[in-house]
Amino acid sequence: MAPKKAKLKEAEGDLAKAMGELAKKRADLKEVQDKLAALQASFEENTAKKMKLESDVDLCSKKLNR
Image (cartoon, rainbow, N blue to C red; front, side, top):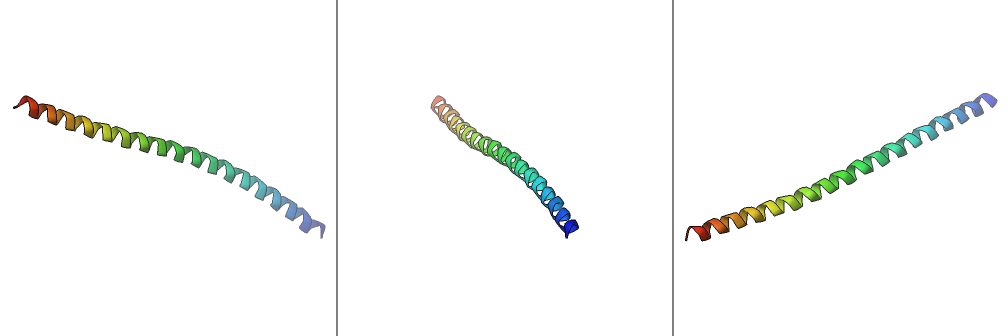
């Protein structure tokens, strides 16, 4: 019975270590996902600004050609 308990304790230790590593990897993933979301929001904002500026340039060019 003692060898089984020892193996169980060892397996529980391995599980605890693996769960700790999993938690760290999940935290790392969350950090990367947050950065990606921020970059995506910035990209969309800057794309909207670019389109507005292109529209303004087009409008100014039309006014100059009148």
